[in-house]
Length: 154
Picture (cartoon, helix red, strand yellow):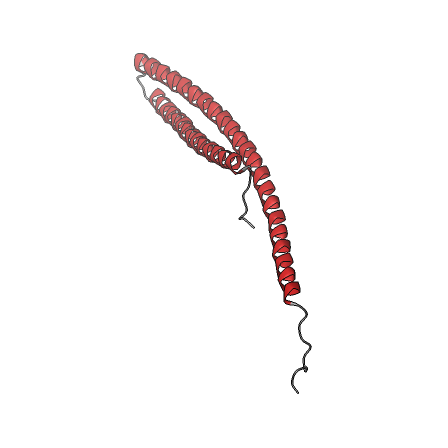
């Protein structure tokens, strides 16, 4: 009997390649999300540090209103950058969620074919074992009945 051959192997190979691609996409999305989270945290930290400096400078007299106004404008700019970074983070999280869903779907589709392949291979193994047993039975039948023990020792 010829070796096992899964008729849908090419499709399984394509699905496995698709799963690997989705895994790479998920990894890239996670890396982008991590970078966006770092940028959002960093801009928030810069804003808080700048605000602390502004508050410290506001307590020093005489107060330079022009410098304080410039500092306040800078703080507003930092808050805007933080809002943009947080929006970028939300978008990165959405892309990560979409990539995770695509990966899980691809993995599920691949697993369906893998289970089918395993089932078909199991069926083939049962048939191969039955064919081998049938061949042994036929060979034994052609050889004739075995001589009973103890005969011919006379």
